[in-house]
Amino acid sequence: MRYNKVEICGVNTSTLKVLSDEEKRTLLLKVKDGDKKARNELIDGNLRLVLSIIQRFTGRKENLDDLFQVGCIGLIKAIDNFNVDLNVKFSTYAVPMIIGEIRRFLRDNNSIRVSRSVRDLAYRALQVKEELTRDTFSEPSIEEIANRLGEKKEDVICALEAITEPISLYEPVFNDSGDSLYIMDQISDSSSSDELWVEDIALKEAMKKLNERERKIIDMRFYLGKTQSEIAKEIGISQAQVSRLEKTALERIKKQI
Image (cartoon, rainbow, N blue to C red):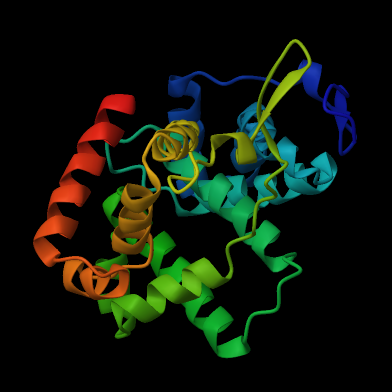
């Protein structure tokens, strides 16, 4: 399904109706009283919300028809479980419900195998999360979810991480005029940064300026991890001489760098 295709699941997205907050509330009150016509009208009036949410997941190369249908399931759940007695906008409650349904769908289609017990714990945790979110209209902490389940916090965290879909390092996160920025471009390696690379070159050049004995002492002291006493015995001079030569060599290196 193309990103810019107007029709998704047989629905012409350009003609989708948008309801006002007042219209939504009126329909929600009718839904609470069992009005099925109002329920269908409320679903149709929020399809554009589902459409806007699935755009977040287009980078995963999933079929938009599938994502739209799954998002609609989340929308229906939000409508059926929304508490009209609380002073909260419907979209505030519906958005995380729709996103949660889509993420669950993506996790179920994950190619990585996870043990049944871990997967079951993860799904129970997600169910409890939805229940707590519905009851409090706020996202619960992992600790709250673990307490409700009677499980260890660490086990819940591991289970939820186990069913999270891996992301490719080559997945684009930004695109500007054809120049894409990928996830791998955002990953830094503190052990081999450009600054350290330059410093390493400067250090090697400074080491070349030392005489043979100074270079040998620095090499044994800082690269081989030997003590001044061990170096003194090996090259046949006193520890005091090793200390003095080491100090002089380090000062010369600092000046060079």
